[in-house]
Image (cartoon, rainbow, N blue to C red; front, side, top):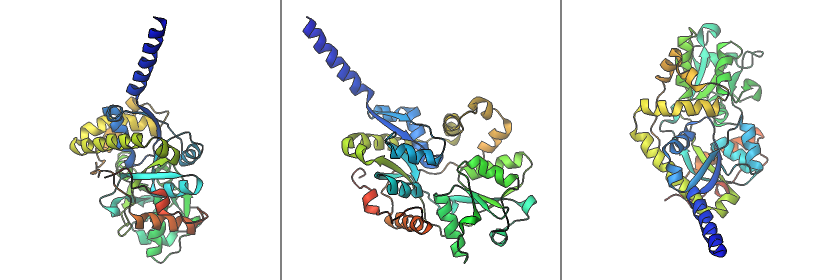
Amino acid sequence: MRKLYSVLTFLLVIALGALAGERLRISLAPILGSAPVLYGMKWGYFREEGVDLQIVPLASKRDMFLVFQTGKVDAVVADTAATVLLAARSRPVAVGTAYYPEDPAKQFVVIVDEDYTGIRTLDDLLTVLGERNFGRIALPLQSDLEFAMDTLLERHGIDPNPNFYFGQDNLIYVASLVSFGMVAAGVVPEPYASYVLAFAGTQGIHLRALRDFQGIPPLPHLIVFQHFFVREHPEAVRAFLRGFSRAVDRINAEGKEGLINLGAPEVIRLFFQGLDPEKVLNDPDVQASIAAIPVPHFPLPQIPEREVFEAVSAWAYRRGYVALKVDYDQVVSRDFLP
């Protein structure tokens, strides 16, 4: 009887382990590619696919590099530049895109305080670059935003100087630096730009959007796994992508109001730790600003384009962010998507 009990207990443990699913620790960045992960968790899609998904909150991009290098997460959602930098430090495997912008010209927005600076156009901004501390642009360094801004400057005949930039990962601080007149401009991604512009208006601050990124290549957000996880748990990667794709399909079918009501509290908890979601979301100015946020169409995961990845890799090499150009074929896998 004791032997039978032991066998049944062992089988029960195995069964419960199977129900729990394969554990997958993931960290997210405050970018659109993280949305299907957050919604997919809320809707239970990853659990239904057999993945025990655990989100590991991070305070900054530097933390992301550290936890990925030390193996404390199994996957991240990152922009293309961060993926290139990860490849210079570790062995990431990009299994597909998390988000692919439909209109590359609208990926990013340059914001300026027109009343304070007198800047109304990109040409106005270019004339003040490098003027003392004020003539700088706040943006996250080593990011797709820096790559896009460098590309924009080059197309206007200006050699991008690192001194033109004020590095800041926190997008709230980027907007604050602009509104307080500490920098000439800031670069932020959509849909954060739409929110900031609307919220500033409710506070009597007249921020202006300079949408001059025409011709910048589409810079996807990528789903990036540890090499060892891909090797040891390929079915878990496929299960994750199935759950992710189900979330994408539902996001595109849902109404904007329902998505925001479900997603806004999670975004605040994850990316703005210390704030009370209920208190923040009950503010009438916040509600009005959230209403201004556009909800884009989310394409299903796809293989990243070689040309775009290699352009970002070459840029990171020129900038001195990586010692050698990162090889597309060593990072991007074609094994997990149809």
